[in-house]
Length: 510
Ligand SMILES: *[C@@H]1O[C@H](CO)[C@@H](O)[C@H](O)[C@H]1NC(C)=O
Ligand SMILES: *[C@@H]1O[C@H](CO)[C@@H](O)[C@H](O)[C@H]1NC(C)=O
Ligand SMILES: *[C@@H]1O[C@H](CO)[C@@H](O)[C@H](O)[C@H]1NC(C)=O
Ligand SMILES: *[C@@H]1O[C@H](CO)[C@@H](O)[C@H](O)[C@H]1NC(C)=O
Image (cartoon, rainbow, N blue to C red; front, side):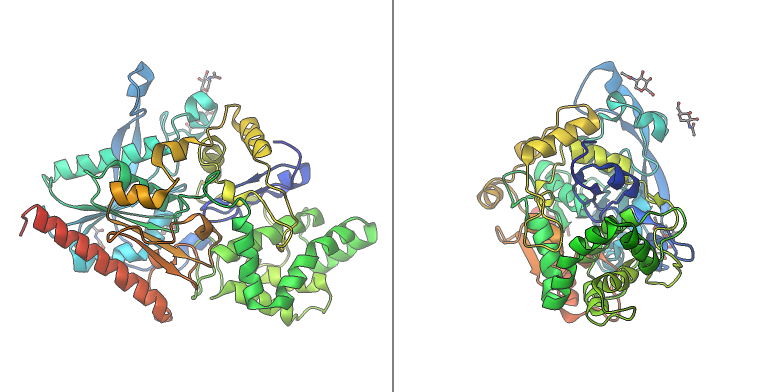
């Protein structure tokens, strides 16, 4: 790791944070779908919290080929790929199959949190299939042993997006063949990185998936396709939209923290104000703060949630409320502490900050760090301009690439994704070459800056919600959902119904 910037490893959905590396120095990786969460006693794991009863499925395994694109002997190796199936609502051989394109974590996390598919299945008579991404969860090549699969680049080199979607294609074809349901239309769903995979699958495998719902998929987050400062700009603007005072306090917080960290008296004061746990260092505070701010911006949902950690409804507003109306003291550091409590201690189970060691409950980081350093180089999330609530960090592509190279020991391929899947002039290209894709984006979500925000054709439709956060449309509905969110889901249903109608008419299926 290049010892330059504070390490803030983030994942597509959530920010990863590693305090030990933050001290040693490190680099910024793109936020991923995952977050390295500091577990606090008494706080349940986010993903497990409040999973509706209807999430019931059968677990199956497919013997998957190691390398789809090569005839060298090693390619013929196989591994067990896990997928989850619920066929209770399936209407039979010509009825739709809804497939979730698994992203960077164990598949249950996405199965538990993709309520839209569960709620739509009965009315569409759809089968539900959630396919785990290779190298995550239980779908580990080389005998299922994660240590072996991640031991060196010879082993990890099969972890690529093209292999992943080829896996999905094979699982789908095999499933349909076993059911002799050759004409059953397949709609692929995905959120975040999974949404990117869903959109790309529709582009690359139009004969296998008939439509795609790509939620919060930053397929334009790559070099030259989007502003490298956009991610942190959106995060900052979320806070500014709540209150200028909140923004100003957050903006000044880093220099106050740095000032305090620089003296013994300041450090003692921090230790007291933040009530750090034994064994935790006050040096972790800035990283913990960054982590909280990015994460709540991504998951600024209108209802309380437990996707990766427990949060109240509208957590950005709650953080600003804590800052604007502090309970611990009027100084900046007390306000920051109150704000961090919203994120780290929503359930009130935390007695001190930075307690247990950080963890990776959904098994995201080994894989995502590899992907983010080889081909998934989402440059939109590397630069930090000098007008945000974070310390500024000029975007330096050369340095980003050098850090990636240091991480894997391999030359990164920052242009491969745009070369293989496209991105440049995407409107005209997809208008001529593709169809049946929904791109949902919520503009509160920093990843929306890399999303497709304009409809491209009659069937490549951008649904953009100013109040929306990261793949909020995919979440289970609740009674408290605002009207705009109910409308988005209604629109998605209607669009899918139109695709199916056209499909059945074209195929002359009654
Ligand atoms: C998913 O939900 C099931 C059933 O509620 C639960 O047992 C499991 O821990 C959850 N897993 C994740 C990763 O959220
Ligand atoms: C599929 O989901 C429904 C609704 O939650 C449930 O009633 C049913 O038992 C599930 N089927 C299987 C095979 O798990
Ligand atoms: C995985 O492989 C490592 C390294 O070869 C070995 O030490 C470990 O025991 C294996 N784990 C399992 C569960 O087989
Ligand atoms: C890579 O790791 C595997 C499994 O741990 C090992 O068998 C192999 O020798 C290693 N290859 C290199 C080039 O280090």
